[in-house]
Length: 299
Image (tube, rainbow, N blue to C red; front, side, top):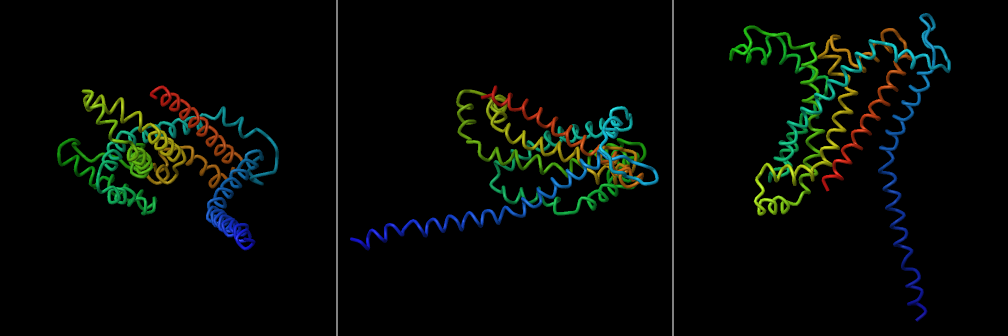
């Protein structure tokens, strides 16, 4: 009797130790991610501190606590043009990725070969973005495949200048970011029960009406995630505007690089970086709130 009670009392101890061990492993697995996030936060804090400093042509950055750099941004037409260019490119890339990516995501979610199609989708991401950018330069050059195809079929009478234009930057960003649009939408569509669509069909709803009133509303969380990721990455893209823009497409990231590494005006470049982050966060928060209201209304 006593031994039975002792055994019962000693039972929870191994279970508690196992839970503690599992929690320790969980924290250990989260440590690398936490370290990366912490390093990014520290980098943002360093840039924030730099943005309040002053700049001198001789001594470059001098310690200060001034809002001069932020005030300068408001009246700088170059910054305004760069921001509008960045915003326009990001919106175009996001919309095109959504229009192209949604059918692809739907096909992947309904295909019996989802794993293979997903692998083929993310395969270009295994290649460095700089190599892909130079690949686009070759394709869009005067003797590239695009110009040769267009001149052969008679759309263009002669080769057109495609590289170092806004179009080339948009094309490269679409190629680079479309997996970030497809994967979240496909993930949500895979979890949508096909019974809903079958029920709509049984109620004599056509394919278009079924899609608009059943499939599309249920996939809104994936659309929200995909558009948020794509837009944020397009706003902060650097390699595509630098390499394919060739100095003709001045985005915020290119302008920041010029200030920080050409004129060595780190305070102004830091202020531009902080302002860009804040504007993107506000735009994404407003978009998410609007999309949340649309989702609530659809439900």
